[in-house]
Image (cartoon, rainbow, N blue to C red; front, side, top):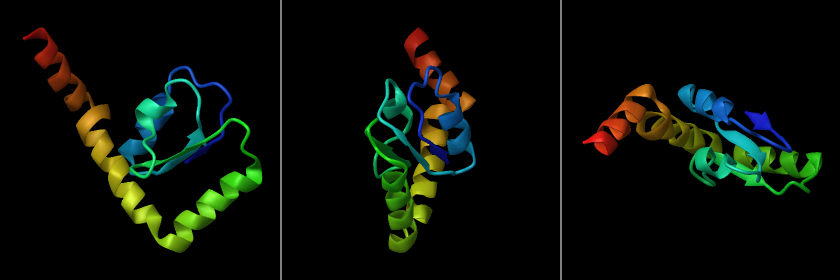
Amino acid sequence: MLLPTRSECSAIVFCEAATYGAPVLTTETGGNSTYVKKKVNGDRLPLSASGAEFADVLEKWVKNGDLDRLSQGAEQMYRDYNSWKAWGDHFNQVVH
């Protein structure tokens, strides 16, 4: 998923991408680092990054075979952090 956002308030789309095992390429803004972990499920570029820089990262992912690994990382993040089950488990830990 490519989301070169300049401001991201809710980041729910990153959780949705993880649900489908979609790696994410976005910008370094606010809470994006909570949902997009470099070399785990995607990457974050500086706000100053150009379209060519985004294209370079995507091309590198394809050429280096990183898409499968990032996809697996996205699915793992979904299971461990972003799913309703993970949320419920964490909430139960806080309550107890």
